[in-house]
Length: 363
Image (cartoon, rainbow, N blue to C red):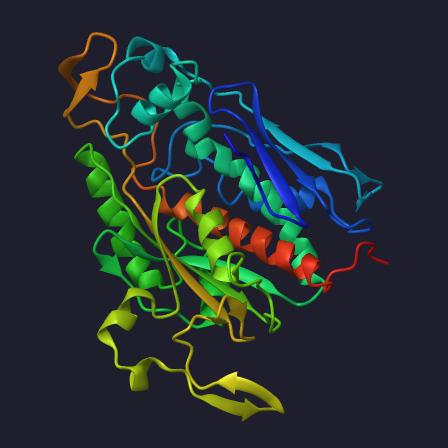
C-alpha cells in the first residue's frame, strides 16, 4: 500500500477500521503555527459518527490525541502525529462472513492483492473510517492556508435525484452545518433527509454529489505537465473511499458546449486580470488562474445494504446470497463533506508551501 501524499506538506495515514486506532503523520508543516487539539477537534466533529439517524450508529468519540510535533500550542517543525482510538468495535458479523465477498466493497481486490492477510474487519484499511485521519490533516492544512487568506468550503449539492444549483458563498457558510445533510439549500435539505430515511427503511442506500470551493486562490499554483493542480486534487479526492467521479468547473458539460460558450473571457477588475465566467473551475494548463477553484465529487451509494445480494464465498468457491448486517450509513455523502474539504486543503497547502507562499517558520 502507498499511504502518503504530498511533496512539501506530506501526510501518511495509518490504522484500520477495527484496529486499535487510526491516525495521521504530517511531515513538512512549518514551525510556529498556533494550533491546539481543540482546533483539530472542531473539524473532526463535523464527520463524527453516531450524531444523527442518517449516519452509522457506531458511537465513536473521535477525540484527537497529539503525540508529537506540537508543543506549547504551536507546531515545532517536527513530524506531527495525530490519532484517535477505535472504541466501539463489533467485529463478529465480519468474522462470521469472512469469505463472503460484499458487493461494492474492496473485499475481493484486497484478498487477492494481499493473499488474505489484510485486516477484513469493517473493511480494514479500505474503510471510510480512515477518512477521519484525512480530516485531522485537513485541520492543520486549513490553519496554514488561513495565514494567506485561502478558504476551503464544501457542501452537498445532490442526494440521489434531489439536486440543487450552486449557492452563494455566504449561504453555504451560514447553512451547511445547520442540517444533517450539509446542504446550503434548506428546502432541498428536507427532501434529501426524507429520501435517505426512505432508502434506509428499504434496506438500501443513496449516493450524491459534493461541491468544493477554494476562495482567494493565488495565481500560479501547479506544476505542469505531470504534477498539475487538478491532477493532484483529483488523486487526493479519489483516495476517499466511495468517490467515483471528480470534475472541475463545467466538468463533463464542456462536451456539450461550443468553444465560444466554454471559453472564459478575460477582463480587468480592480487592476487584476480575472475571467468573466469560470467554466475552467479556476485552473488552466494545470495552474491556478486566481479565480475560485470549483470541484465536484460524485459519491457512490453505501455498498453495505441489508437487501439480499448475490455474491461468492471465496473459500468454498460457491455462489451464495448475502445480507450485510452491521452499522452503516444509509448515505455517506454528508459525512464526506468535511473529508472533501480536508483533502482539497492538504493539496493546496502542499503547493502553497512549494511556491514559497507559506514560510518554513511562522512568526
